[in-house]
Image (cartoon, rainbow, N blue to C red; front, side, top):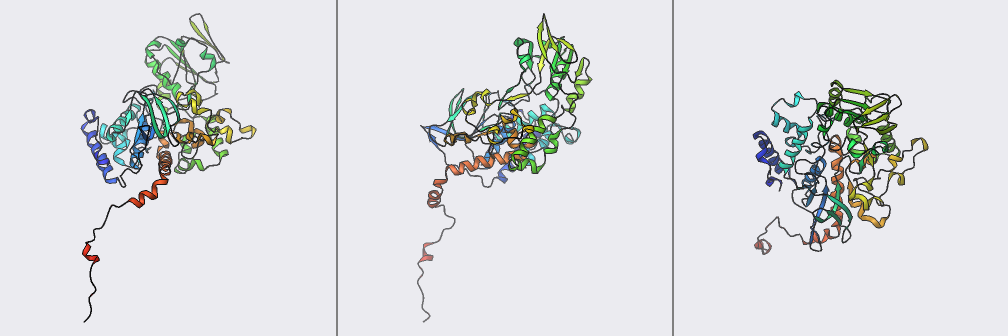
Length: 487
């Protein structure tokens, strides 16, 4: 079935990219065993029902759709609220020049070299180009994802926003409210990225400013408005340095980057965790181990990207201020007055690079579900010195990324899978990132396919008994031979 996959966007590919896409589709045809659909279709009230509905058409959503097809599940829908080709963060608020992830990562190509980012990069930029880069450029990663989607003709519906997920019209079904009407599905996957379980965090001292005087680094920013301005940034992570770099290049007069720590993190603990054993078998770890790894990751954090750090610190007008949390923020005439333990600043505009706050109820599609799922604080009680209210608010997910209901009567909740940052404690801090896909995707796909099989368990024997496709044709005369005597 995979051999017939067309390329919708072949006209915008280079000849080398088109040749690679044709090679990838031909290889898929060779590898497609077993390739027939095996899930029995269902309808409800005359409406069709997707076997799996994926919310989010970025890197995870694309890979999930492809992985399900490889497993013989073809009735898949992928919804994304952004325009086609702008899914995910890469053309919006991701501002780094290159990915933080080591370029040797793999996963969404599912072991097929012609679908890999390396093969695409060399087709796009020429032989030897891969060896000349240290990490994958951000814009090239997005171009690769566009090529991947077109090559596989993945079923993404763009400009569709989801506002609710609820129990369907009968057991075993979910109803998903969207801007294009209600949809039915047997399972739903939230492939909604870093912000998919909450919202970006704005400290109250900054939120008290008029809206036009501040931005969050993980949202769209009109940098032209900052030309000639004094800009203050709170935070020390990747988005802080990325935003500082872009602001100064756009003409900001100065950028003062302030953060609470006495010094920047220089060791990235994610690299230590990225082993096949840890990434493949994380859910089997004891709860206390998972909890305390998450605590360590919070405490240690990770450095900003090397390229962005070097670029920002080399620009005129950049200044970095450790041990400088913002204790007071107020308007003083036309200025924004910021008081830290070390000095007082005056800015024209401020930007929060303050990360993310997990709050399921902050997501419109999860408000109904949020009050009914098991959280880590419901399932695990740490000793006092290991307490963390922030980690306790994360959902306690099952082995296939599924939410677990507090009340067994809400079984529909376990048909919703959080393949996003909400899985941080349950499945590890890397699992839904680029570096974790190789081991996390198979875990999710097995769970989705197992659920579909169990849904039709009652009909397996009847279907087997009714199966009559013949392998062998036996001539009738072979059954009517008469015995002969020896006389």
